[in-house]
Length: 250
Ligand code: SF4
Ligand code: SF4
Ligand code: SF4
Image 1: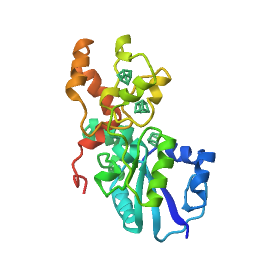
Image 2: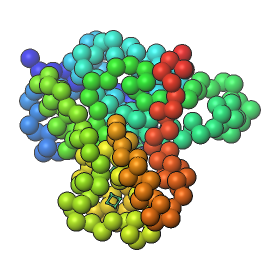
Image 3: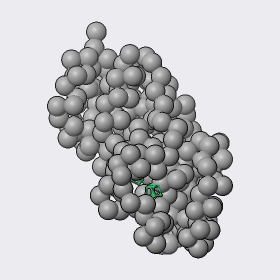
Image 4: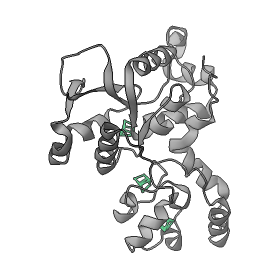
């Protein structure tokens, strides 16, 4: 029997689902083992009912979304989050830099009372998540690995080491030595230092390590005379949602 896999989106740009739609050959290994029963971006059919695997994109930003993700969780055997929005809150978390009434008024003006809105949360701040695929957009090779692990019922965890470890192996010149700031030292590896390889800094889209080397990062900043706020402001771009406490929005 093939596993019933369904994709759902919440607050997001749908860029991670687009990555799935464009995977191509890398998905061939698993295509004969899954039956995609719901995926709004590529098909109009909807199966309803129970799912073996629910793949979630996007963060939770409304009371309606809280109810919907709970409902999906109750009928899915396994739940995977894809991308920064779903896995750590992502760019939607920038809303949490403001008081909710203030940001609602800014966005919706006088009509703000008609709009359902709560501080942004990652999916695991509302329901249990079994597997995470990190990144903005998600890193496709990691998605294929995670899906295979989920289908086999074995655990998967992204490497608990920093982006710097991959950056060093790729022999990039450290951006701090060029007068730039980079979130690599405290960010979870697994993207093969994608951005630095392509001439950009790391913004921390894969989320902070469970146990980041904060002392090392602070020493690097001191050495290069960089204020701590520059780094925390950059880090907030993807990681602000985690400031919301569990059940705070219910
Ligand atoms: S993680 Fe990035 S690419 Fe994926 S849905 Fe969110 S904003 Fe879009
Ligand atoms: S700080 Fe950034 S550029 Fe420097 S080694 Fe780490 S990931 Fe690479
Ligand atoms: S280098 Fe940093 S910002 Fe770029 S994909 Fe990796 S974790 Fe994300």
